[in-house]
Length: 110
Image (tube, rainbow, N blue to C red; front, side, top):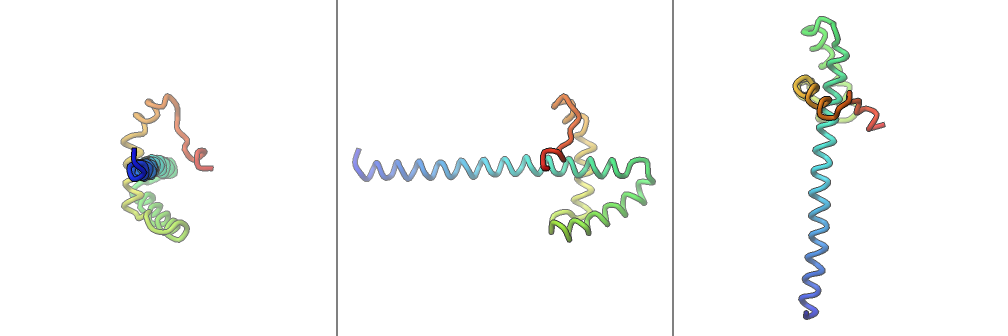
């Protein structure tokens, strides 16, 4: 193999490692965000509890959205929080069944 071919193979291998890492980071980020939205949705549903949901829930999401905007920045609008709540309600039973346990992802992040 010529020096040029050896260098090309080396460059290709380095590029492949970087591309694989980027792909892994993307998948890891997606998983982390799914867990985050699931947990946020769970916390909202539990906080709403038996309270008058329409009135209390709207106020809760408005206030939580404002708080999170100040604390963590963009990305947690009322509609995003509403979707997180829906995500939890739709998938809670199937996720806990699939995992064979009751999930408490908050412990993962601490």
